[in-house]
Image 1: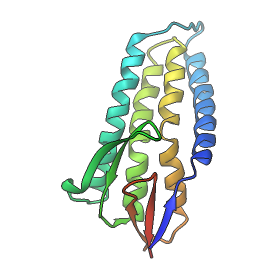
Image 2: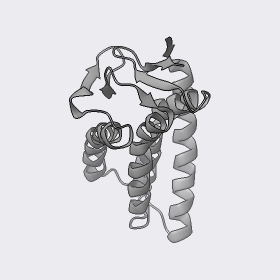
Image 3: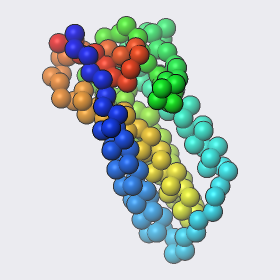
Length: 170
């Protein structure tokens, strides 16, 4: 069994890159739709972000149960005090490559699409910033999916119980 701990410096680089790229793309989507853009701080956007954090982890749980076929009682929620981040983990379950990658990417795909749809209904650039944040918030998941993708399809994975990472069982 091989332990893989995620390099948080690389996750941060992924975060900054995806934040900037997704903000620019979001901005250009809005610019293409509207002739006039404006920026106004919006409390609805802040509430949306708070809700997204909870939904993001909930979608990971659904992914573990539906896509990775994990028993419901093996899916746990928690909060890493050291990294100041919530998490959803699947303890003591062997997960296929497809199940793990799809579970990792599920929240970002769904929430990214929902947030981009909001861009079509507002010319407030604040929502481009939120869209950038929503896409970038999956950076750790993108990086883990990238690491998992390097292994053969027959390999099984297990979530790390204490660190951002996983175990590889070849």
